[in-house]
Length: 120
Length: 108
Image (cartoon, rainbow over all chains, first blue to last red):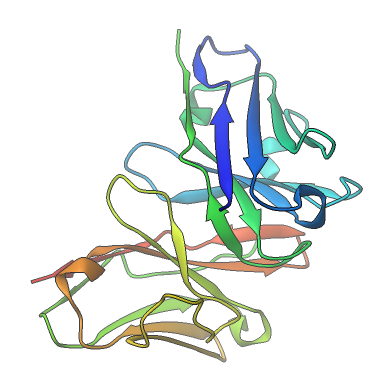
């Protein structure tokens, strides 16, 4: 059974940094692209970042460029999102999400999310 | 950047058919996936690659994609279908994934 467990969220002041982690199990992690998708309270889904199975290709939403960095450790089956220069509008539930294949495929598994609150 | 347009809400009586549209410039040239998100839960894919159903998704759910509109159709609607539905594409021009704003389906 696929399991994705996010951690690292919390309350942070504007301008601060957080590193989100997603521990994956139940599948061969290196074979699948992974994504971060966020959802502000009461709002819709918003794609954040994606990374290919070997980590060689990464893509970011415009709001994430220059501030967020997606990475992965295939030996530890863990996905990361380093978030710097955080803004109030980055407050959201951040989901770790696995694609069906290795990139440009639909998402077939989601974690339960980790909540990020940016506030002074 | 590429924009997907969904109606904010759709209301449907039990047993009837719900139609949810997702509009985008030549979206028929892209591959569309649909996700269902029930309150308090993570999303789940209900239609992928325009019209395919993952295992476990009832055949009441169907999808199509042509021209400037992709459509998710839910036939014989049940109370349990009440949820938010999102369309998603990969935009190769901006190299971004894009989600529609979501459609809330209310079962009357």
